[in-house]
Length: 213
Image (cartoon, rainbow, N blue to C red):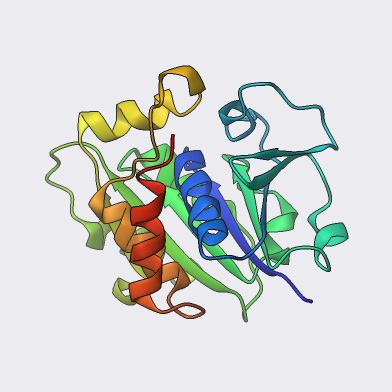
């Protein structure tokens, strides 16, 4: 078995990684979420804590902190690397698909230009739309065009204050009653997975997770 490896790099996206791993598991596949970020934001979604180099199971999804993902390529169908804001992390080159995540803050956009990818790697932009801004998505695409970003490889996730609150609260298990992602995040997850799964099955998996307690 050879794993498919997704990488997420840029501003906070631990909620998207958490959701993607949960949906993959609900579809009957095994996945591991690997937090190799400096701040450990993804690891903070596991309430009982994690030691570096160990793997814990949380809601049916394995989560690890600071491991070499290559060691697990024969054990998992999907590996999802969370690299956080370290845009110079060389392990981004080990991913089949890389998701560059940003908002409209210039320093976050410009930092992504430090990401080094191989020509054959698939790369996508995820813009988290949190404010009413006069700048549109084409500005990000223009700045990030050296990375091969264009209209066909860009996603915009429109987020309300409630969506942002849910992301933060994901790190506090006792106050998260159920799995919850925004409509645009559901569409993103469906697009990521529809190469391997039927869209109807993906939506059914998301619906089943909404009843998770």
